[in-house]
Amino acid sequence: MSLARPAVPADAAELVRLRKVMLDSYRGPDPDIGWQPGAERTLRERLAGPGGDLMACVVDRPGPPGGLAACAVGTIEYRLGGPRNPTGTSGHVFASREGEPLYASLGFVRTPDPSMRLTLSLTS
Image (cartoon, rainbow, N blue to C red; front, side, top):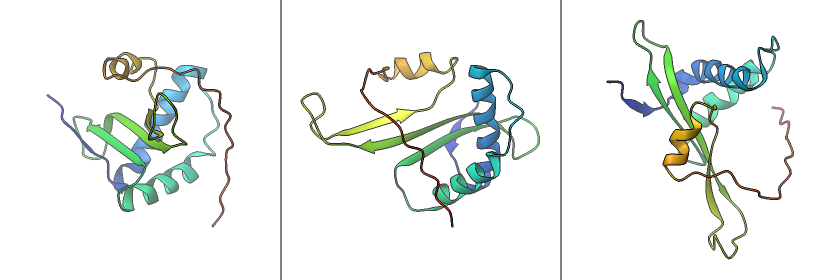
């Protein structure tokens, strides 16, 4: 039986690889991997920092050390509270189609939130 464990900075490259596997499962294979070094660097920094709004758990792949078989990455968001969520706190997970039933069984639901996203490009 495989046990999940909290991700550490050394898992960043494998987490990015699994992210690409998930994205390819939705959209089909995409040869663009130019985003991966920046994603890995950011993830490594966020996993090394003190506890915060990002959590990742991983399952190690059998065989040589360093490979991952599965992961779950989620965030916690804080928004202005409302009638159905007075604290404004919510959790979000990024799941493949195959993982969605698991998250649904844990209480996660798709929402019709009227929201828009802005992708911020931070340079160092």
